[in-house]
Length: 327
Ligand code: DON
Image (cartoon, rainbow, N blue to C red; front, side, top):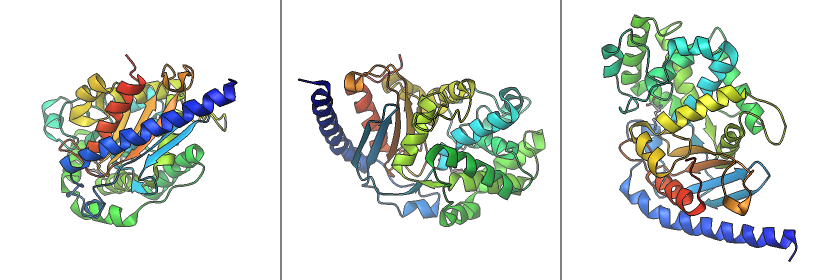
C-alpha cells in the first residue's frame, strides 16, 4: 500500500474517532450553564460543542457544531500579553505583571491587596489582563484595540470584528473589573485612565472568531510564533514559550493544576465557552511526531471555574486517546 492510501485510511479513522469523542463529550454540556453574569452570553445554546484541529503540515479536522462565531473573552488575554511583550519587550511587561499562578477565581480581587506592592499575579487573570490592556501601543483605546486587531489579522488572515452587543453588555455590568482597575491605578500598575483600560480590556474580550480561526491561533503558538503557512515570524519563540507556559500554569484558572495533570497541554479558556490549545510537535496523532497542532473549540456551557464543561471533557479524552500530553 502506498503512502497516500495509508494517510487517507489513517485520516478517516482519526476523523471517525474525533466524531465519536465529540458525541461522547456532548453529554457533559448538561453539567454546565452559559455565563449568566454577562447577559449577552447567556443567550448561547448550551448544547453546542464543536472542535477544529489544524496541524503545521496541513491536516485539518473539524467535528460537531462548527459554524458558530463566539467572543474570545479570556482567550484574548494570551494575545494581549503576547502583543504587549512583542511591542514593549518581555522585561518591561513583567515589571507590571508577574507569572505566578494564583489558584483563585479569574476575577478575584483579594490578593492584589495582600501581596505587596500589588503587582497582579499573572496576565491570564482579569487583574493582570487589565494591566496588560493599558500597556498596549497607541494613545487612545481605539488605537490600542486597532493595533491588536491588526496583529490578529496577521494570524488569521482577516481583521476580526468586535461584538458590540457583548461589549455593551459587559460594559454595563463590569463593576468587579472596574474595582480591579481602580485598585491597579491606586498601586501604580495601570497606565492611563481606568475607563480607557476598561474599554480596551472589554473590547478585546468581545473580539469574535470561529473555531477554525481559534485553531489557527493555537497552531501559531504551537509553532513558536512562526506562521506555518505564510512563514512569517509573528512573534518571537521566547514570547511564544512564555505564553504557553502561562497557558499551562494559569490558562484554565483555578482548574489549571488539574487540567495540567489530566490533560497536560497548554490551553486557554474563555467564559463564552471557547478553548484554544497548542499541541507541541511531540504529538503522536497521525504517527507524525514532527507535526504540531492548534486546537479551537467552542462549547458554551461552562463550569464554576469558567471553563467549557464539554470542552474540558473532550480535550481530556483527546489527550488520553491520542497521547498528546507534554509530559
Ligand atoms: O472580564 C470578564 O469577566 C470576562 N470578559 C472574561 C472572563 C473570562 O473569560 C474568564 N474565563 N474563563
